[in-house]
Length: 93
Image (tube, rainbow, N blue to C red; front, top):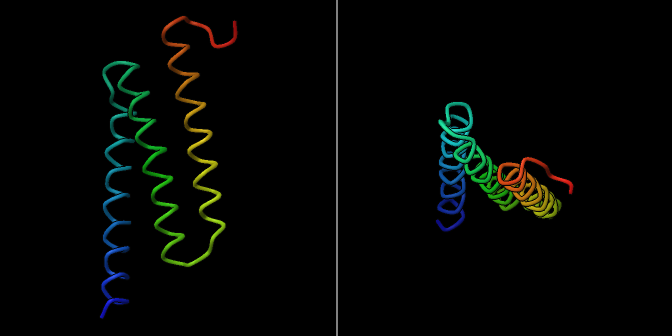
């Protein structure tokens, strides 16, 4: 019973994460301001990392956890760079 419940819970979680990523992509494409687009990209990489983690839980392979860590690392750097670009107009001083 618990294995079946876990399997269905992971499947539902993956479905909702894909739906959240779709909403974030919509906001990236139709965001009225650049700040909205940066926030949507931030949400997109967080959802992608969690989706990879859930997929790793489903398959039982530990390499997906390292991939999720890399996604969050690159996403944080990209968000910081975009935020600095929007504030000052340049990334490297």
